[in-house]
Image (tube, rainbow, N blue to C red; front, top):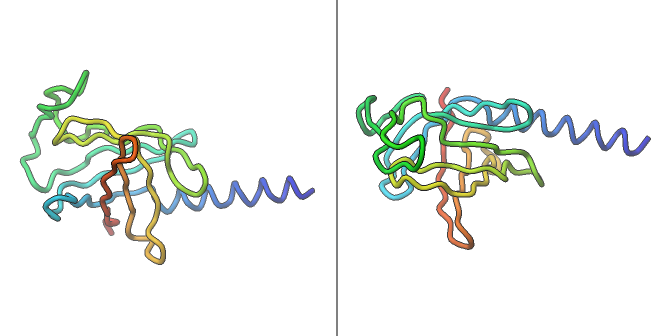
Length: 139
């Protein structure tokens, strides 16, 4: 009985966290502090992904010149830049995030800022080095 209650509680918390982070977020450049884009986060099959839905700093036709592989020279608008994030230990993690400006993929971890469900903390990292951005919910 305890296992069933625990499983129901975990499922409830996962569903609630998914509902809180899905939607459209305004990204802020952590180096210039300028608004960069809108990213829409969606959940499918227990995984979170995100695509660029609006560019705020550059023209809507901007291409990903520095991107590797199949994304090279493709439009950044509608590009998937967050992949395979899943809930583990209360965070979205285990996936990757692309920085189209630098053309680099980073391991990623995301969580809602304590006390403010309209701020998403996004941390990209390689080894022990990381960058943190704050994304703001678009109402």
